[in-house]
Length: 193
Image (cartoon, rainbow, N blue to C red; front, side, top):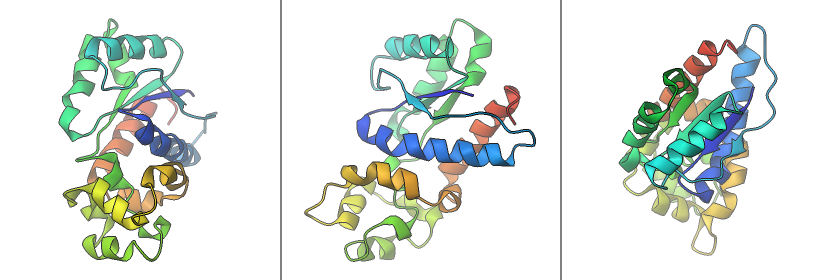
C-alpha cells in the first residue's frame, strides 16, 4: 500500500510524515489480513499552490499511489473537496483523504504533554486540560513556542514530535479522530482493511 502526502508547508510535512506512518501501521496491525506499507512519501507541491496545480499533482500521484492525503489548515478546508471534484476520474475522489485540523497542525502537537520539554511546557499544560481541548487554543503556534522556550525554534522538533506523540492522545482530538475515520474508510474501500 502506498500513500503520498501534500501539505501546506515543510514544517507540517516534518510532523505529519512520521505521524501518518505510525497511524497507518497501527491500522495495519488491527487489519484482519494485514497489508504491506513502507512509508508515506511527500508530493512535490504544497497545497497552498493554485488549486489547478494541486489537482494536477494529485492526479499524477494517483497514477502511482493508492492514496493521496491532502493537508490544509482550517482557512483552506474547502480545497480538499474542490480537488476531489476536479479529478478526471470520479472514482479517484475516494482515494483522496483530507487531513484538516480545526485551527493549525501545531494544535495537534500540544495533545501529548509528555513529549514536550518539562520546564517551559508547564504553562502550556495549565492551558490545556485534556487532549480534546487542544484545538480550542487561540494561537497554537504561540503556545508551542512557549512550550519549547524562547531560545528554541519548535519546528526543529516537529519530526521528533511526529515520531513520539501518543496516538491515543491524538485520537481524543476531534479533528484527528475524523481524519483517522476517513483514512479507515478509504482503506476499507481499497480492501486494505
